[in-house]
Length: 353
Image 1: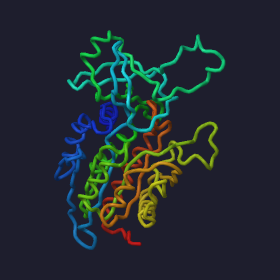
Image 2: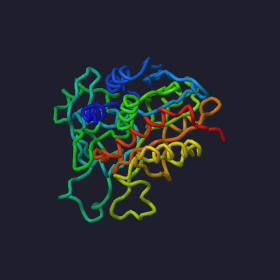
Image 3: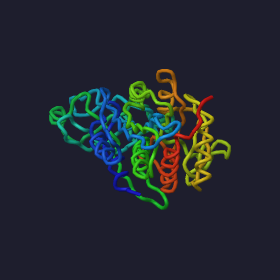
Image 4: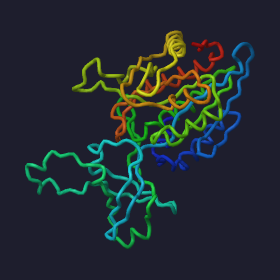
C-alpha cells in the first residue's frame, strides 16, 4: 500500500471550490493508469480508461466518483487586531474544533499556522451557568499570533483555512484529516492500478464541491452519461463505547462496506448482489451498510439524464469529520481489491430492473 500517496492526498489542502492543490497531485497519478485525463469547467478531474474486450456489455460506461474536497473554512473577515472570522464549508461539529491548529492559505501561495478558538472566556473565568456549553461555529476565530496590520497585509477575505494535522500510522490503522474523501480518491487510483484488464470504458472522476451539495458529480455525470455509477466514499464506523450493536452502521476492521442505502440514494439491488458475489468469490472481507443520514455522489449520478444504476462502496473510518479520522489498513485494501475485481467483470453484470 502506497501510504506516501495517501499522506500527500490527505495533507494537501483543498476545500470546496478551492481544489487546485489536490488536483495537481491527482492528475499525474491518474495519467499513469488511464488513457485520457482532462478537467472540466467546474474543476472535476476526469480520467478515461478504455475497455479492451468484446462481447455483450463491452462498451458500457462505468463511472467512478470520489470527491477531492475536504471540509474547511473561508476567511470572511480580518479584524483590525488581526483575528480572522470564518465561513464554514461543509458540516462541522464545533465540539471537535476547540483550540485546534489550522493552516490559513493566502492567495499568494504562502500558508500560515494559527489557532482556532471560540470567542469565549477561558475555563478559569466561567461561572457555573457557562460551564459545559459547546461553542458555536459562528463564535470561532483564528489567531495567527501576528499584529493586525501584518495580518491585513497577508490575509484577505476568501482565503482558504484547513485543519492542520498529518497522517500517521497507529496500530493497524492510519489516522489523519480529510479521509473524507481523499481515502476514496486513493482507492480509486490504486484500483485502476490493480486492474488486470477491463472490457467496459471506465471513467474515474475526482469530483469537486461534494461537501456543499454534490456539485461536481452533477456536472460530470451529466457529461459522461454512465450506464453504471459507483460512488466511493467513507461511512461511519460506530463500534464505539456507548453505541448499541444495532446502531454501529459499520465497524473498523470489518472490511470494505457495500452500501444498501443512505438518506439520498438506494443502491441498485443487482449491483449490490454483484459486489457481494464478487467479494465472496474473491475472498475479500466486506460488510453491508445502511446509513440513516447523509449521502454520496451516487445520488447525483443516479439521477443524471435518464438515470443510471448506482451504488456506493464505502470505507468505514471512526471519527469522521474530525482531524483524527481513523481507518483500518485492511479495510482500505479490501476496497481497492473489490473495486478492481468488480471492474474486470462489470461488462457481465445485469443491472436492469
